[in-house]
Amino acid sequence: MQLRVALIGFGVVGQSVCEVLMSKSESLSNTNDFSCLVVGVSDLRWGTVFNNDGLDLGQLLTEARDTGKFCKNLTDWDSHTLIRRCDADAVVELSYTDLETGEPAISHCRTAIETGKSVITSNKGPPALAHRELSELARHKGVQFLFEACVLSGTPVFNLAHSCLTGNTITEIRGILNGTTNFMLDEMESGANYDVALAKAQELGYAEARPDADVEGYDALAKVVILANTLMGGDIEPSQVPCRGITEIDQNAVAEAKREGRRYKLIGAIQRDGDGLSARVCPEKLHLNDPLSSVSGVNNALTLKTDLLGEITMIGPGAGPTATGYAVVGDLMRILTVH
Ligand code: HSE
Image (cartoon, rainbow, N blue to C red; front, top):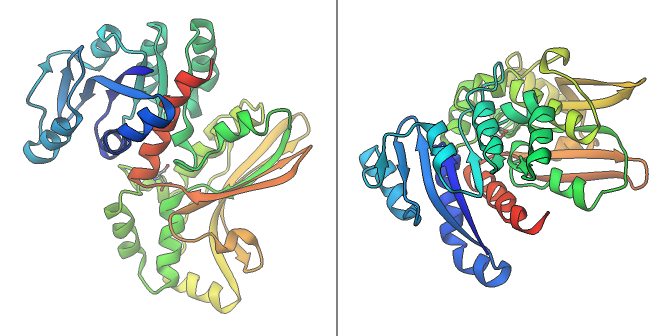
């Protein structure tokens, strides 16, 4: 089956989605009967392109990288016009995360759903700030609102919880939710200073467009809010969650922790608290016998405490272009398989 798609945003993740679609096209078609026709792309930097018969992804990647702009199939449509007028089954929202307003991503998602298109996003703004509105609108319109890429990138969290763990009640969540800071803490333990470690994480495509979001803990905070509201029935806002990042932890602090037989990790946690939830993001100096202390590099980890199965822990890549591109492609396939 073929899915018609429009991409909003053609940065690191948008380009990686195209690369995964191209490199896996034959096996997805043969094994999963899945193909994807990208009919439109809109990006503030490269412009907007549309072709109802499908765009050439290889050409788009070359144009973006070599000439710095889209050249063929150009239109003067803005992102909302593309979303409204393209005849797509799904809109993939990949603009940069703004955790204060959630815009322009929330409006993009709303326009797509209102015009009968499913939405897939790697942008944490919409599920963190408007999950209830967008998921109810999607249900009403008979389309899907999926965001697997938002937490642990391609390592399955929501799809796992909603399929394999159905019937369990999740009572507690604790984990390492930001790849950039986990990578930086490891690099600092190996002797790099803070600035060098951050520059390396940016170079590898792990960090947010504004890496403050990683090191100040706001990226992990958004993920905590998404997990609380989607997997634990919460209704919390980012401003209600105490949040500290790793900006106060330098190479010396990491070395001192190592001498004590401990290791710093940026931890996000959610617990039931009476009828509500309490959540936090902060660095913790873990004993080396804590399983989370051995989660290294860009990997993330998440432990879900459930009533029927006990504790389930996932460890896997938490950031990076290919891992995130894969998460988006996985959600695209899910649109055709889940009704
Ligand atoms: N900047 C994020 C991280 C990307 O490092 O985890 C994935 O959400």
